[in-house]
Amino acid sequence: MDLVIEIEPGAGEKTAAVYRALRSAIVDGRIPAGHRLPATRVLAADLGVSRGSVAGAYERLVAEGYLTARVGAGTFVAAAPARRRAAHPEPDPLRPRPSWAFTPLPASGAEPVPRYDFRTGIPDARLFPFDTWRRLVGAELRLGANNPGMYAEPAGHPALRSAIARYLGYSRSVAATAAEVVVTNGTQHALDLIARVMLRPGDVVAVEEPGYPPARRLFASLGARVTGVPVDEEGLVVTALPAHCRLVYVTPSHQFPLGRVMSLARRQELLDWAGRRQVAIVEDDYDSEFRFSARPLEPLCTLDRNGRVLYAGTFSKSMVPAVRTGFVLVPPGLRPAVVAARQLGDGYGQTAVQAALARFIDDGQLARHVRRARRAYADRHARIVAALERHPWLEVIPSAAGLHVTALLRDTSADPARIVADARRSGLAIEDLAGYATDGMRGLVFGFGAVDPDLIEEGLALL
Image: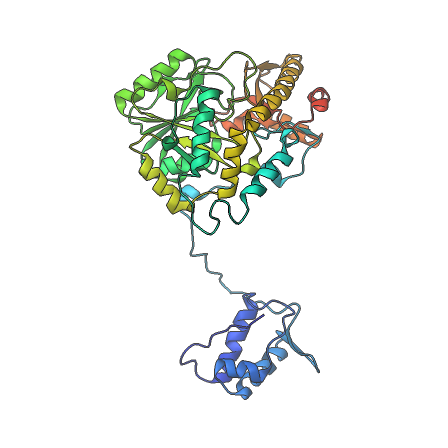
């Protein structure tokens, strides 16, 4: 490893200057413990000082315990060199804005997998056709494929944008063109792009209450005033929306986390409200592929006649999170700004993955995988609902889609936080509904994407 240190101009006596530079590098950790320093002649030539100046600095650092000299081997940084301690440590001058002063949400892969894994938002990777996917990605990583030496389009691979438009047409009855599609690294990335081009500090954003915490945090981090709006049996309560609102974030097909579906009347009411006030609506259709009963209602974007809706989706749930690819349908007036924000933020996505996903969709592999996964999840959904309904202290909220079920606590004396903690000590991972609500709603949330189907009844019996 090359040693790079600097002697300040006009530092005075050279031996002292070399000593201070070396000592600072050792204390700061830039020269690690055990590292062999250059010979005095070599370092002297590099620094433009006499060999005696370097030798004198080495001798002083050896005497103070920062270095050790080994006959015939050289001079090394001590295994545990002394560290400076300021009498009055100065506060770190680098501070984030207050809106960023929060602890990151835990990632599902950051902790051991529990035996009874009812965490939310995790699909079953065992259902995914990895061999097929690996072949597709491998084919797109060849030297002659996708111009690997060039920078790609920030809006996404053209073939994938076209494939997504076709897929939405037959799977969700959404009439979209490739020009409307902007490919993202999942829904959260789409929300970030939208917020950056639409929101100014102080703008009001309405979100569902209870709702999706990462969306709430994202909007707040950009300086928006986030207002929770209650959800009833028909969905977001439009009459409770704040008057001076710039953007509304909703999950109408499968409200997160309650699981309810926004009624057609409520959808039309929301669109009429947004049209009168020139408010944007972000529709997060996060897991509509996994519907177990009646055909879903039309998305808001298909009912929209005023160009108020931005429709976002992700393949993290329908495939696996590692693919980390999503999309947003952007109205024409916003599209150039959203594409520019994507280019400024991270340039463009993984071209080979996007090209492989386009083939995965167009070859029918995604549709086949979704059908197979839907059958597996429908069975788990039925079994988990049946098991929960046997608990008289729980009121299961009806749902017909998605990868989780929510139940409210009938017993007013029960403490959901304690239930979750006690369950975790027994190897049962469930979630407290209060984690999704600022008003402290009392209930439990049970994901079933990752749980072993053979352990559903056994795990819920621990309740």
